[in-house]
Image 1 (cartoon, rainbow, N blue to C red):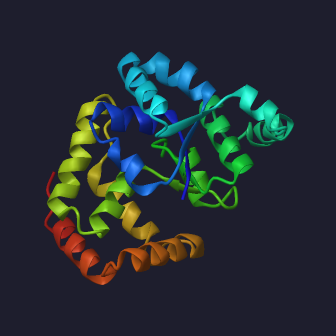
Image 2: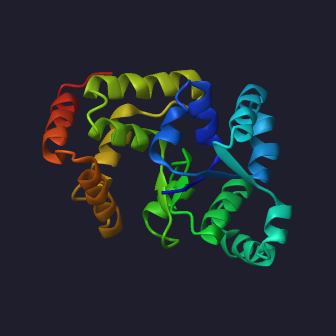
Amino acid sequence: MNASLDTDIIIHLYKSGKKELLFEFFDDLYIHEFLLENEVRTNSEQVYTELLEDIKAKSIQVITTNDLISRGIKNLFDDYVKEYACLFDRGELRAIALAKLLGIAAFVSDDTKNGGPHQLLVNEYIEAIIPFAFYELLFLKYLQSELTAKQYYDSFKQITDTSMSERPMNFNSKIKATVRRFTKGGSERDLKWRDDFCNKQSINLKQRMQELKQFLNNFKD
């Protein structure tokens, strides 16, 4: 599965040394040049420099306006930008339009505020694009048995403490929302995606969820 990247999750994961979460769960990663030059560079020169190294290594692909023109799809991209302009801010707007344009299945973003892009895509305002926040990527890593529930929490805290000191996310609320999304409270699309993921990875979902539930029942931040 390929992914279109939003600015915030890039900064959060690169600053906290957790960028491998992006490379672990997606085949090809794309970023629109607007986000790279106008948002990542403005918000963190350090992250921008490291990101350029990954782009140079072809781990992430930058899509420029010239790329869209040369492929003959610039006008269609502009149409998507106009269509979604009332829903999203400038950067995420281009990331989502790019995903729609190129048939990219995932949009990776930590903008999870009410009415934000993550929530809108969870609610399937745009078909065929499934959103993931950093804590949901950690959830997938946990399901693979690569993390204990305590390590899940520690990784969450590392990311929030390192890169979200002004507005840290709450572990308990975000993980409970993730559990709801990928269990009985989720959409048909999300539950099918979860089942496919678990089947491919030979994951014992029931066991992993029981262990996480036990941890959350005893959790004190």
